[in-house]
Length: 452
Image (cartoon, rainbow, N blue to C red):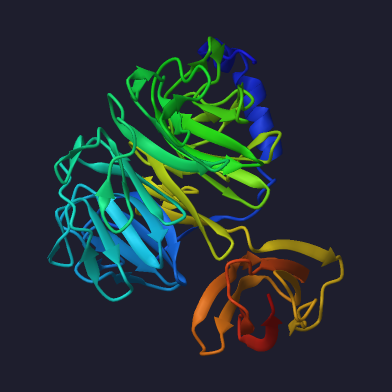
């Protein structure tokens, strides 16, 4: 493994600023807000149905009373019933239910001790009595797994991990300290956290269930804690506050191939609390300021070989990205922050990836035009050509067959010219869609067909 210390950051400061300038054009799109955001911290994100769900510790989202959990449909925030009476730390989808877990004791007015199921219209209880917070969720087959600070579920000694399949049950003898993250990798359940013992045997902050007992994943993590995990490129990536594994420097992120650990370039100068993969990239969020020598404010992206920045990143004082998700092909960052890309953003923001706009001609057109997308039908991406005869604000939006807007592809000031953008509809269902160009006094709409 490569070694990395704070001294290297100081020695290479000027070169990092140059690298940041060179790499800033890798992603040309900007940060955008999701309405007026939330009134408090976003801890978790997931997709449920056609909406993205945000949960955490906030009373209001988009000006509406939502009580710690809300859904964004692409245009507005809506509550999920009456929400919860306390913080939500984790989200998952299990057997067509949305699962929320955290510190709460009621959801939608129903007694739901730390875990609740949303069926699309109402909240339901698991019947569990859990004596601590639930910090992590994962699903494998017919089983829902939870991890956290608890030690007892329904009178059973669970020691910070338990499973649900119609009833709560133990899974091994558990851990001697908190479980912060859970994931499924190579058919096994992995747990990461602050523990040093699993099933009565040494296991430094990461362990997996081998079918009969919890087993240490190699030498484990030397220091700090594990706070997030994500499978990417057939390897398990972990993030946290640790700086070394087996005496080798990793700087808060590492990857496991099932038999050994390796670093992910030079890592980060502070904690990583969220990981998310989309397409050929994995995204990391936290409270760091540097990624792989580059100034990277709280969020960065890795393409399998190098880390890159996402614009000017996330800001505010203090600022931390605690959750990363994707919605309609774009990246969503949630946490505790007031700025995204230098613009005001209340704890949640959208990094546009679906609209890679490229100029395709040096000729200034004499009129506005919107071309037919190609290919059409398409799966899952298509290109859209348009012409702008004079500088101005340009809007391109996608609508479903009912006329509801499902995505905004472009919303920015553009110079005159002929352009082409790529629209990725990976997260949309098959069907007829419409795309609309609006610029100055011009407006035109065309139809396209997504077939999966």
